[in-house]
Length: 100
Image (tube, rainbow, N blue to C red; front, side, top):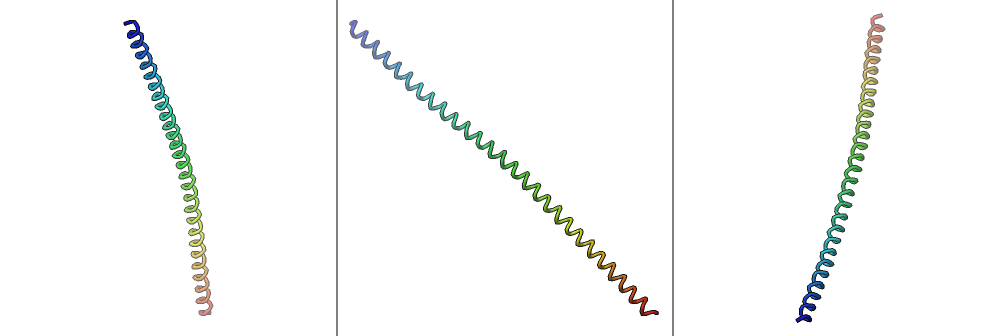
């Protein structure tokens, strides 16, 4: 009977040690997976931050292009206005010359 009790005790101890090892392995795998997920979340956050910065840079470039186009168009319109004024002055001078 002593042998049976000792055998049963040894098997029970072996079973619990094996379960603890299995649980430890599961816990280690869980921790590894969670760390991997956290790393991917950090990478996504960094990529989003970089994308936002690039979008702001692109927006600034687009604004500068729009402003340059506006200035160019206004300069062209000012030149057209002066051309029309010069043509009108020339026509007036021609009419005055014809009257004399």
